[in-house]
Image (cartoon, rainbow, N blue to C red):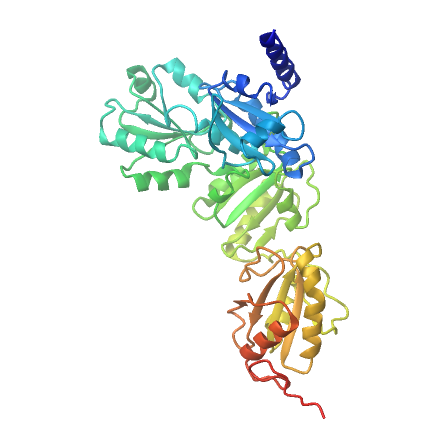
Length: 487
């Protein structure tokens, strides 16, 4: 009877989640279901968790992509607030979402990979089987290459040659980054006409008339292979995702539109081919990519775009990481002219900025991107600048302190400045990773801002500024003590 109940529970759990290919597990089904699967990625979540809500559609998409893989990979989830409370407690789940990889019903390791669909797929595929798949026939090779992933493939007549050993060693080290396969089968070698060769084989959906679908590695060292893949993996115009952002170097030109190689590969390549037509003219001078507009709305917002229509929006960064936008409607000719001017330094950078304040006479001056040089760099004063966010609790607590310090120093050659770093571009020399972030800039060396990491009470600021001011303050000595005496 107990077995029948368990089977019924399993059936209900599997049926409920069949639409999205993610198994919904509970305390009753967790162990028995996982025993049926070789490798399972489990997401422990809470329905109210914002991070979980953002991850769920990516997780479901990854499950759909990976469901027919061989070796098999399963994606599952456990609601820690309802039917999975005991399981979540057993595996010490303290935050949401928590992801763990299981071999059978035993936990193997914590998941530390990307949180978007393609990244999840790539990471999990690297967790199963050997680092490089051994291909034993032409039919098996054809099936292996029928994929959305670019493949690094080794053709070795003799599997004991030094290049083959280098290939397998490299594959083992980079199994989470690239997809590897190799063969010594005579028919496979004959089809490709290759022996003792490593070849980059681009995914079929990225094939185009502007570049070869295969690129041969002509050297023999591990470092050279690493460089070869970095330079060639994404081709002339790569598909830039959240998982591959770091692969693309400046100067970089990105086309943002409805990139979707699952539901609309033809439409995706329609625009990519037009970008390719321009990219082939600038090989070695700039990097090009396409990105899904919905996945990179935060980047579009940084350039002032709240909406992207049917045609691509072109955004770029130069070698100094300054931002540029093609304001004209997308066309091959407009893109070509834009890239030429970008590389020649003939474009005005795009700067996200609030309007310059009409009145800036308060003790704490307000800087925006458009007046930053005037208010901070060229004010001929020692300057303490605060980069803040309006929603930041620590910033709100600091505001009256900052005001009081500024009032005490109104007669000094010192300026206190604040800037909303969420509404304005921060100059690249200021490393703002949290709020509030403060920098001290001596008047004669504004090119060398110093991070302020001291206390945040009025006396702390007074002591610091008194000590580091270019000239001794009129109202305070170098120790921060007031020079005024009461009568």
